[in-house]
Image (cartoon, rainbow, N blue to C red):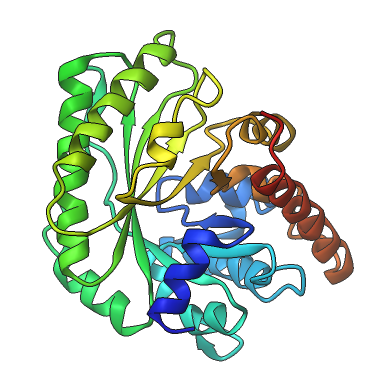
Length: 298
């Protein structure tokens, strides 16, 4: 796939984007869910080696192809690693899966009801390396906990500033201002966020586009103006802590939005499974998420 092929697949492909980008802070929990206890590693290097092995097992499974998984978001160390003796982005592209890279370095402490992204002083170098490996786009996450207009406006401003830097580096940004689905002010967060994103989209220069990765809204169909906006290549949804069955029910209520699930994709996979058991469990998860991404109930 060349860049035009990747753009077309992400813009119009039937399927979803797998999120395989757990970072340092979330890796022990991801490994525990996979059946690997903390006693199995004694250093950060060993921990990342184990999570890389898990991701390679997923990527190389016969169930994981571009027929239903149109993209995959990678952690930086995964992007720099190998699968089947090839760079991971190359292995994905050969399977028809468009590679993305998580670029944020974690979150600042909460202020005004939100958590901004930490500074990324080496971002330009990371973008250049990713582009050289054939990566198509990036993903950058911040978090909204309260319906604070000033805080949410700051989140959106920062996200679009980083998006402009990503576009200048030749990659497609996935903007991810996650709304905490446990927030008592969730509906208000959703509405303020959408309004701020629409203003930022309308103010974008030239003909550039972005992608959006959002929590599933409390009010079904709320984000339709974002789905339909000419500056948005695709809107994808995170599972946000929902178990897969519930995440898929909520996703199916929102036309035009496809999944970009992490925990909901991986929740039934275990290190101890045989190859057949693993491939079957992964295939069932992929089928369920694919179905909610392409078959809508609303």
